[in-house]
Length: 292
Image 1 (cartoon, helix red, strand yellow):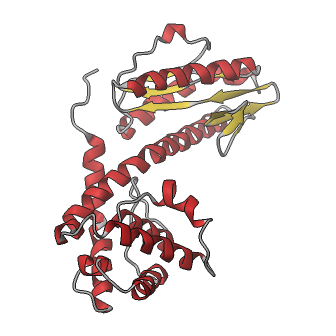
Image 2 (cartoon, helix red, strand yellow):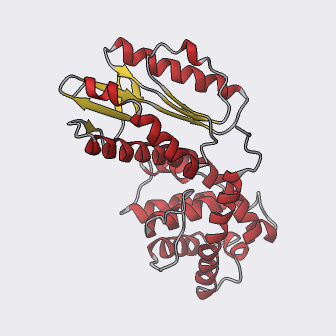
Image 3 (tube, one colour):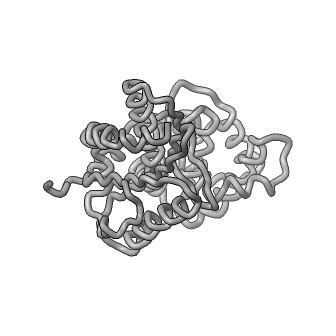
């Protein structure tokens, strides 16, 4: 196959960020309603008490404007405002800030979130003193980076759901009394995205996707595949890894499992991947029948 040169991920992310501009403009409108000229004007607020009040008011605000995640799914209203303000302030709401919230005093979640966000506002204000740093052009670049990071995890979850859906369809079509786990399972500290179970055994399916070709993470990607197989086999399980990568440097012949699925596509090519995946899953019917 020809390698994919176009950066599909970037094109899709830019489209999502453009959709999120309305959310930014809604925040600007909110600030203007409470007396600020611009985002920069609010960031430079000297009154801590007033800044806390403005942030808490915004976190409590309800509107129909949506903030979308890396797969164009809208965040719930309260989560959207928390995420947006954290991104605006150049921080990570889930990875860094959420754990800090447990250490902050407050009568409720909004009070704790407002206090933490205001502390970050005071910290970043002198780091970005120019008004241009708080324009949509600057904020959109921050949002692009944040959505890119979350999109990787969301894409993995998306493929898990595609695999579950196709497995259930196959089992229904061929009348196989097998169950498919609704979520990932953990075996000896190793996680497996999908488990298929029957009266005569279980099959563990780790799903591994990789978009880029080189770099140090490529070695970790390969090591992760081998480890998933070895832990499953040591526990007495059948393991069928599903690898979706445009270019993978691992040795398929060296895999210690009898069955595997390798789809040589960029993971962003979902429409092209799903029919290939469905066919390869159906080719595993003899294996599935053994555990019925």
